Length: 133
Image (cartoon, rainbow, N blue to C red; front, top):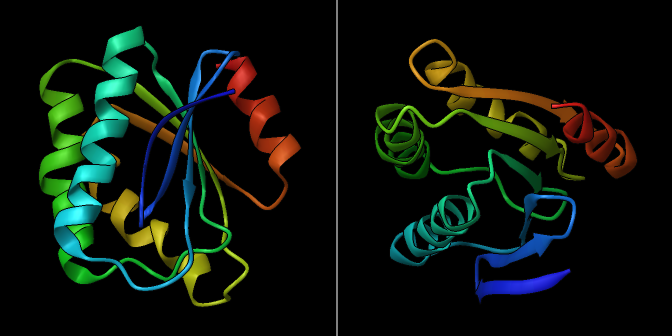
């Protein structure tokens, strides 16, 4: 794997199997830094023409309301506006409260975006699912 981008939010890697591996770091997040992190993720996907990402959220804290709104209103909407389908495998966080972090955000845009996602506890299950997409 090759490192594509890194900041305090986490790391974005290019997986040789044709997807972006998004690894979230632990701790609080600055909103502008968060936006940059996901913008670089989107750029990586578009650069390679990839439609898959593996989001490792095992160490992250739950999304803030501001982050949820930006993901739904901007990041996922941008992919939908581009007619760009996206498959996301999400490895849930070890923090029991963060387990629910992706659900409201993703469910809110499921019908209005080109996102298909599944939540996993094991990385191998997530990568197996991505390989089938």
